[in-house]
Length: 257
Image (tube, rainbow, N blue to C red; front, side, top):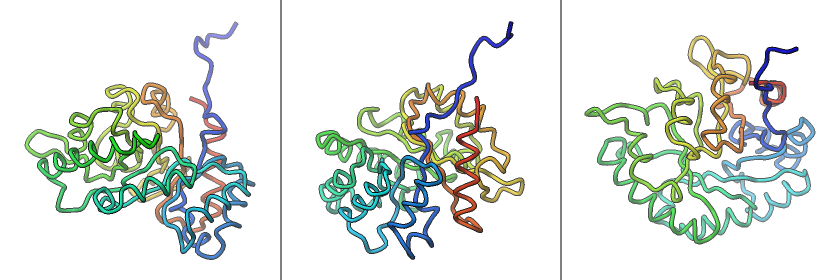
C-alpha cells in the first residue's frame, strides 16, 4: 500500500497559458500565426500585452481561430482616469475576464503613492465589477520594498476590498523582492486568480520555466488557497522565444505538486 495520503496534483490543462509579452518578436512578424503555433504546443489561454497594430476585434478573431481563450489584457495605469470605460470595453471584446494594471508610475512608489493608487483601484474596480470584469494588479520586485515598517504591496491588499482588486502575481518578481509567494497565498486567500510563471536563473536573471531555481512545486502547493486559476508563462528576454515557449509549457504540463 502506498504511503501517499494526498495524490500528486497537476496544473489543469485549461489553466496553462502564455503571457504574450514573451512572444514580442514573433507577434510583430505574424500575430495570427504565432497564436496558432502556441496552440499547437499545447497552450490553452493567453494574456494580451501589446496589440502590434491590431484591433481588439482582430486579436479576438485570431485567438478564436487558434482555439485559444484570451483571459486578460494589460492596460497602463493612466487609463484608470483616461478612457477606463474604453479599456473595459476592449477587454470584453477580447473575451477576457480580467483587466490588469502592469505597474505603478515611479512617482507613486511610496506609502502615500500606494494609498493614492489604492483609492484609484477601488474606483476603477467598481466600474469593472459593473461590467462583469475584475481589476488585477501585476507586481514587480520594487513593490515589495518596506518603507517605515510597511511593505508597499501590502497596502493594496489591505486597503482595497477583495471584490474590487485581485492580483496577477509575478512569481519571479515576488522572489526578487525578497518575499515568498506561498506566504501570500496562505495569508490572503482568493486574491490571486492569475500568475506570471517566470523562473530565476542562479545569477538572478530570467530563465525558462523549470530551468531555474524557483521551487514551483512548493509554491503551487498553496495555489488553491490563493485562488489561482491561470498559470501564464512569461519570460522577459528569451534568447529563443519558441524554445522558451516549448520548454516552459513542458515544465508546467509535467509538474506534480
